[in-house]
Image (cartoon, rainbow, N blue to C red; front, side):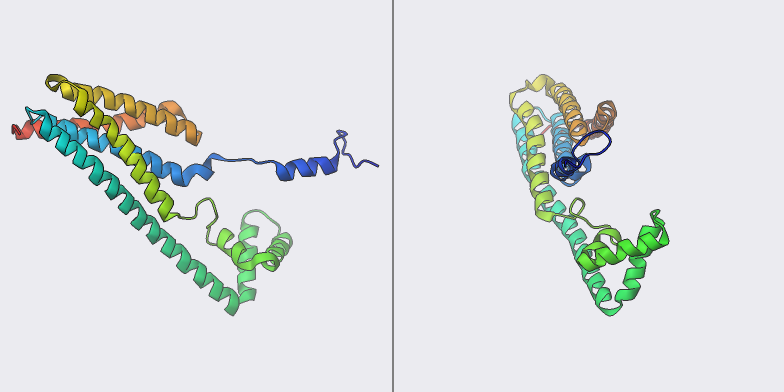
Length: 247
């Protein structure tokens, strides 16, 4: 006899389909997407701003190329080092908390069980149900349950230093290469305007891609990134004009 529900669907088949169904969420991309967007955005804006600042104070192409190339290389390495150090610090904190939780589970398991049950109760479960859930999860893997529900650490948001460093480095280098190409091919007499225009277009594309990848609103992402990028480039150009030095 086939086991069906009211709709006539085989319950066993439904269970198999649910178990095999993958439901990816945008938040699962948050770690690498944040590093990629930050790196590319920083690469485009900082390199273009540097190039514009030097362009407004220079009569020849060589100083602009030198400064822009140095900015791309230094920026990419700096982003990689900065991301690795900062995310590693986060990892150290997570590991310390996990070790502390492991020790507390060994020394006072009953109290930790009550704490876990209280967490589930605060989320909306009845007291008896919360205690039952806490007991069952503790029997399966007590440390994992506490790390996930008490410390808030899971596979999605767990810090990954190497991934963050490499993503930021590559993204910055790619972003910085775009204004660098402008400094190589654009005519000197109007280079800063080419840099402005090309950078704004690049930022619009980056904002659209990041919003699409992250599942957020495209117009809002584009507006945000273009406004701050324009401010950065404008201030950099102002510095070059204020100094008024011909390099």
